[in-house]
Length: 114
Image (cartoon, rainbow, N blue to C red; front, side, top):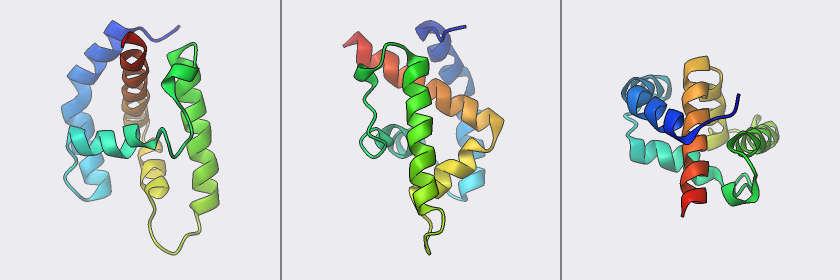
């Protein structure tokens, strides 16, 4: 089943408070939607993915996750915490991973509606 824009928007609206509270708990710092956007949405350049280069939200999400994995693998033994470490921790939690996927889908739909 493919992601639909209205379903993604509804999911984000209904789950953002609990997801951000859980992300804050995992990371040990208060995370707002703006900081979450910087953490997740700000990775398009780092992960060399552009939502406009994909035919579907699922393709975009898959490439984003694949590029995250590549970067995490190259940074996992860094002597200090990197953003890829924090994102990897978040992706280990199924509810947060689902929220991230929906958030990325929302980004995809918003970029395609401009």
